[in-house]
Image 1 (cartoon, one colour):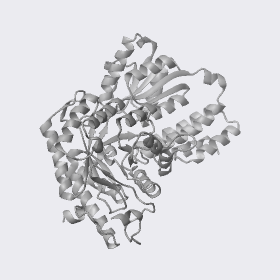
Image 2 (cartoon, chains in turn orange, purple):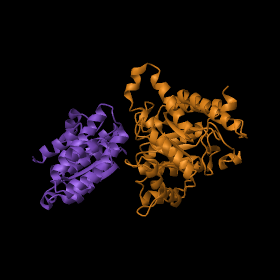
Image 3 (cartoon, one colour):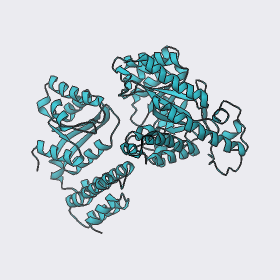
Image 4 (tube, one colour):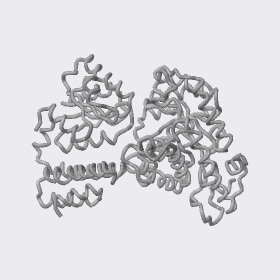
Length: 319
Length: 209
């Protein structure tokens, strides 16, 4: 629905509207971005992360293929059933590991793939391999952040990637104003958006970073501000902080799962276009909850005049 | 306004701490006392509040930033000979982007008279070796926050030995996944479980009071 991204469907009682026209990207067929209720939230499950039990050799990229396929297909099935699109985040330690991981994931699913690693070399080479094997449109680089070097910018540009997560955070900057400054730059330093542009990135997904559960307050405020002022698809990774909350288990057997899904819904309601929800095994905890919230958001938008063209959305699929 | 007010402002993460620091310096209060009795004690109080779940990680980060601004002013007022007499430390996080603990240790080492060279995060063992050879520190402080970095720390010790420079530097380590027993077995000279411990062990190893 073209008009919605331009904020033209009237006074909404329930939904906040972003004044600025929202960018909506199509990454390997998946739409991300827009006003609240316009496009279903993209849910991102992670696989092959540090400590993932299905990985037997993280340096070489050896893993249990049966279990990996089960996880990816479980997420995909839930994505199809709910109408919430999915990305697969692949974490690798070495270039060699990425070759194995990306080849495998690309064969199992058509979903976009986020490539992440603590090693710059590994993630660049992982992306290079993906591009060489014809996956350019599906690859999202994670991430362009304040620590990026000129060399890394050149390498991203050389690999000719089109999509990246931009992370305006390096330890101290968590307020919305600081994140905007990092994105846009100032007299002292070039902004991350300019750096992403120089790296050839066309599709910028802003990750507003979460430090701990309560700091989700800053992450969602930043999503609101960035969408309002820059109109860029924004989201965050509440899972990163959730693991630190050990005491959640004191509240009962189901508390951890209930709180993770609630946390994802919480960020969704403030406008998150994508959510990195953590280990992919949690897909059945997160997808139904986020689909339900998306259905409510879309319904609310419809009552204000929004007409979804795509019927493959949670509102029309989950009830 | 006195040192106890500054201490409280730091503990409450109140931006007015900067103004009070400036005022105390203008009034001629000993900068070392402003540092120790105002800023450092305030940070300890903030740490206590964190332990008691009265404040949260963003507050610690904000407090650390605020203290950093105050320390910058105080350092300019410190007697020159004290600045020159500093022992050098290089500090960084191995393999991951975590920096809160490392930054706090860095701040505390600075305010305790060390000249701190923060190498940043996401480092490889070779980065520590290379930078140490450039900066020539007395001590290397390593933050190890997740399990794969433990192996990297052992690799760092091996690298220093293989390059024939292990004896030149004292090496300390700390971080969420580490323990004293592991640090000893890995070949560290010292380990600390918190920022105060890091300062203590650094001072002990370098024979400082």
